[in-house]
Image 1 (cartoon, rainbow over the protein chains, first blue to last red):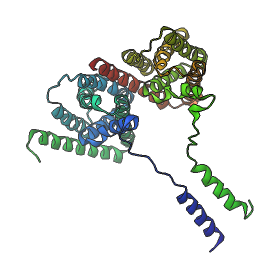
Image 2 (cartoon, each protein chain N blue to C red):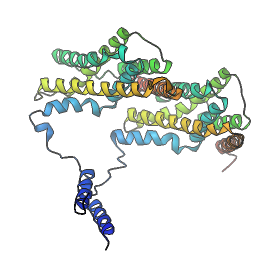
Image 3 (cartoon, helix red, strand yellow):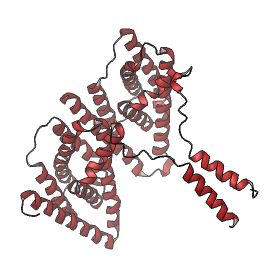
Length: 201
Length: 205
């Protein structure tokens, strides 16, 4: 056995022998709350695509929308979250969440450029419904504070993903790609809308 | 490095990397209550998030205006804790903590340039409130002086580190990219959103 191979085998053996359990998937307390909060926006495809669409649209619209939307969205979403925590019902929340994916995706696909106030109002309206869905789960979480940290962080990361992908719109081919992504999001939103209405599935 | 020292180095490296906690009964040691005081707020997300939010706000306002927070924040923790012990009353203050988080988050998100004295007053009030909330962890056997010293030391270290990190992140000379300021504002809006929901939860329960 060569010297290098011997060193590698020794190091590998030491690493294996000294390995300790990872203690992941706690499921309780702060770790459980964080995990469930972080995964909530990611595990619901309708939430996920709508959040990415917000980032894409912000990137397409450019300044000031690109920074205004990620800053304003969590705040407005929290208002919906409070309504959810207090169990104040909103009309057809699942339909509105699916509609948000459909309309925001369509806005990206069509490269709609409304005035910033109109864009903020559209996004803000849908943010309330997304926040309501997350907030309704909050009181039952393992650690409500950790759940809140998790889902607000995940939402911010999804916006960030949308903005980073949306940066492709600087190039002509990238702009077409973003429009294509918007169209896919709109189609998925339409599917979820039909699913909610009992037409599909 | 010689041929013999290489395997020794690799072995030492693995031993270092795979070291785990010592479990040496630190709480039972002579300075145990110091560590208990320092660790207690760090196990509560309310404290951690409020302290980070305050540190970020202070850091985003610049070094000269925020320097007083380094002194006022640990002092406020001591005042809050000792007052609460003297009155024999501790309060979690969930709604007040949520309101404070909304305030700090909105100040960060709107990039409002508040006066250094206002920042100092906020830091002192917030620290006194959280100091009082931490008084609940003091038992009859606890060495109060060590616990207070531990809490104040933890408060100083966390605020100083977060302030310094925010300053370094935000003000990197003339070439600082604009997105860094936006990122700090976005995190501020996250804090405010979290505070709003925690307030809703406190009202609901």
